[in-house]
Image (cartoon, one colour):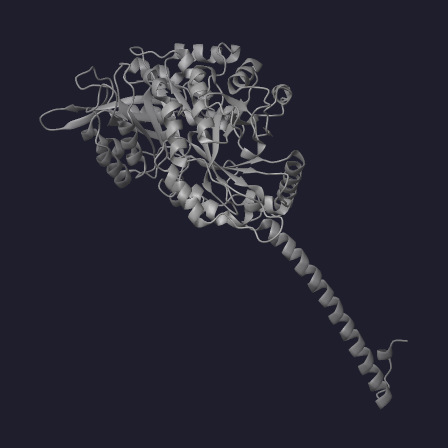
Length: 616
């Protein structure tokens, strides 16, 4: 019978009741304590895997790793949700385009009745029109036409009303400064539902340095009257073969740095390829920049050049505003593989391999011998080949200062391949591979650059050049002369990604030094005056304590990346590598580490993604 069922209220009964109550209270408290302990453990696990420093969701673009010199995010859609369509990414408006500029067709110069009708009823997704002014004694009216005095079919207002009735995106190319405010007022007064690009030539280009719009005035009017647009900024050019100068690129970047809107840089297609390294430099200053190449019936473009542009950029970052015939021939060339892959050797590795994440770039390390090279070339799972270059006899009295050979350790006498033979076999292999050459001395770098010059037109794949040029953690080793190394590369073969590193040592006993702020600042000071892309090699075992320092380094340029490498003599945990991976954007850190270590890291990444997916 239950102790509390009796009516007995005597002292013994009360004592028994109190004892039972105390026991049950203690039992409940013990149970609650256990539940609290279990809850705390679960909360700690969930918090670890869902915190901003541990999940694969990368920091927002206001975090330290993002370049602060350029606006890389357009926040209009958050600030002005009612204007999100006109300011939206064109691929959001056209999801069927699959983020491929090839699927965004333009109708160029749809100024007349016939052209506008063809544009509105055809397959083009973007209707482009030119805006000038029709002036009289009492007024100036924006009209559709490339030049004042041409036959006018439409006023700007009539043209806009016709296009708005369709699902076509709008691109307005403004030809005269005085028309800018009227164009924006006309757009502002209408209920638009499609993306709008405002286009203008704002910098003088080859052969036409002075005939361009005032950029400061354009941007001021856009931000004051109707900022919810994308900007298409271009150079005035003619059909000459003159190349672009760095001054022309610097002027455009100075304008782009002041703009919060999305930007696509627009240029006459026939003059781009000859100056491609300069255009690539500009485009890679920000992930939000894109490129539009154009032609017309008066100035054509070779289909081969269109294929080249496509081969060298992410599909989402290049648009083709060319004639219908050129576009048809372009598509056929892609479908039939008319041209071999044409890649600029100093281009982005991820664009070459068409992969979004740097961790998916796979490596073959120390591919110096013939057998290792042959095996790596035939292994489709390997994307990048890393090899070491010394001068023949380096480390002995028989030094040959003109013969670079493939060897890691001195004395460089028993080698199997010279650098020239090694490059010939890579090219003959015909496989999609990139290469990274590690120079052990300034002499090896100097002699190798002469060899690379001979292969300049035969390297349609990424080329990285590495040398340890600064003293790093724990090191007493003399580095390769930094100034001489960069000068040789820039002078003799600048069409590469440069990989300047620090000399390092791993201490198996005692405390290891981290990469310090002073070290990364010294590296940035060294690289900041050059135009190439850079990747900085970082020793895996010393990486985690220096996360903040490397975040600072990457924040200095959008063309900076990191490459984590590992030596068999050092200890590195999967947890440390995972924390480093989580601290940077996924396209900013390459991992040249042993297969088993990479497998464990990717397993850890997949596990945290699964756990994060349960709570998001």
